[in-house]
Amino acid sequence: MNILILAAAVAFGVLVVLPVIVASFLRNVEAGTIRLVSWLAGGTVIYRGPGKSKEIPLLTTGTTISSKVINVDLDITDQTADLDAGGTPQPIKVRVLASAIVSVGDTDVLIKTAANRFFAKPEADQVNTLTDLLSSSARRAINLLTHDQLFSARSAPRVLPAGTSPVTAVVAVPIRALTTTDGATEAIEDEDDPLAVIIRKACSRELTDLGLIFNSLNIKVVQSEVADARRRMSAAEAQATADIVSAQQARRAKEATIEAERIISDRQRELEQTKASNAALVAQAEAKRQEAMGVQRVAELDATQIAQARADAEKVRIGAQAAAEAEAIRIRTVASAQAESIQKVNEAIAAGGESYFRYRQIEMLPVIAPKIAEALAESRMITVSGGEGGGAANQTTNQIASVIQTVLAAQLVAKSGVLGPDDKK
Image (cartoon, rainbow, N blue to C red; front, side, top):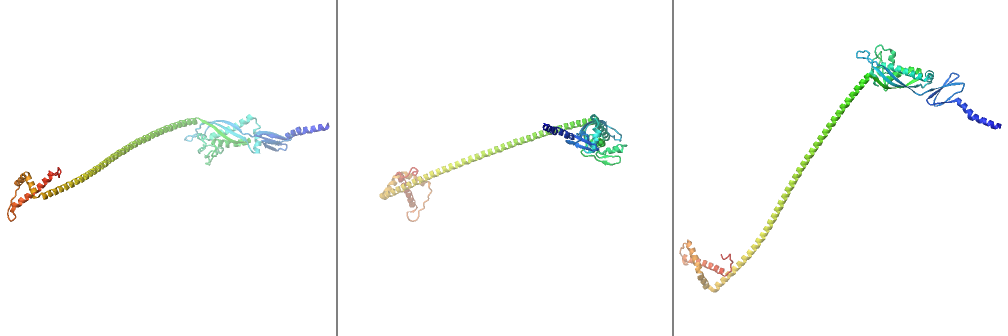
């Protein structure tokens, strides 16, 4: 029984008492928090979450502060440092809406300072403190900048007004190319807004005294009547510019449309001209083709006529040749018949003798005598007689007798039917 009680006590001590003791020595440090543990000797150990902090009850004292960033909204209304052309102050009322982000410093000194000076206050007082600190720095910055610098991330050089204190000049040093009263010129960071730079520089010391650091400042809105007027004027100018651009674009579009229509019209006119030219060429080609066909037909007709003429000539030649051959045959036949007739006459004369010939002369004398008498009457012959042989009268008589014999022979041949109709004439 005692053993069971002892075992239960040991188990209870291991499972319950020991964890409680360990938990009293090791404490959780959540993310976004910082644990400060102070020992009896006065030393302080800082633990950043997430993690564990070592603490001994009755020997250490611990406190937890937030390491998260603190967002502070600012609404600041003040006047700028503008000057007129004569150098007389002419401030412009502006309203700045901004958002600042601060946090606890990273070093142990800043953490201890924040725990003692800032986080020791109630939460409402913490926000009011930061708001007052940042607002006062922002007002000083606004008083150092001109209206144009507040509306531009790139500010132009500016000479500080007469009577500006050196401390104020030191605060204004971060402004881009800002000239101080002693003529020195320094430039601000290229990527920062002048207002944010001045606020950061102005409140850095105050925040350090509270154990805090300045992370960033976001300028949300900068409002002023001048800015609104300029904005309206810019909007009007932008609208006018947009209208001008729109009108120019519309004009260019219309010109482009007109130019495109002109080009299309020119192309259509060129196309019509090309079609007309092609039609003329086609008509000309067709005319030449018709002319060529006419020439071809004429040539074919001429060739046909020539061939016909050649055929006719050939026919004529063949007919003429045939006629000539027939005529030749006829002539040869007539000649042969005449020769045969003459031969027969001669044979008859030779067989009948002089008596047959004289008989035929006497028989034909009534026909021949008138013709001979008519021929002698029309002739103009002079007969001269002289010499031997019967004289001229005898020769004339002999010639007439020879002619009579020839005529008689021809008559005999004609009467015998040897000659044709054409030869009897």
